[in-house]
Image (cartoon, rainbow, N blue to C red; front, side, top):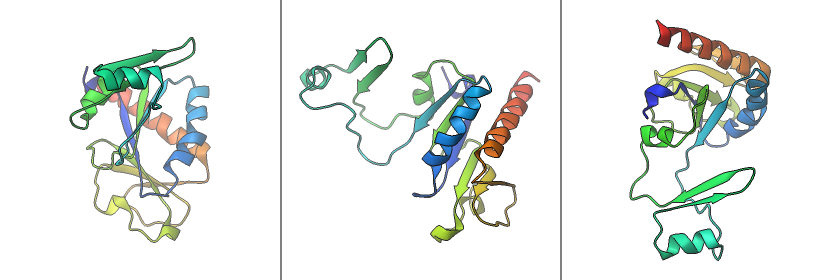
Length: 173
């Protein structure tokens, strides 16, 4: 499966800008609208998702390429990789959905919504990234794209839903 099977929107911003907080407020609104949304969170740090001493950890340490832990309500897949997965490889592991939101992934060449807080004193990403289609900010900005109120998650969710409708219509044309 490739990225062409998914509609992807990046949620980017500098560290501490509020990406996760905004997603926590927007995701329930997208779900209430009937959308199935998946999130891929990028980290620059090494992740240890399994717990030392647990069976799944012991299986990986013993040489299993992947270990899936399954319960009646969720599952987790633990796998070591030789290199960071490409976006297509990440997407191929997801179930079909209406939208995939990428938190982080600043370098990916996908449409992005930037979260920008002028009080952090960092330059906005839209100045150097033409793939940013809108900015959610808690301050006044002079941007070459739509500026949304970061403190109005309903407006941000509406923007995402409208953008999604446009993308789906364009893909059918």
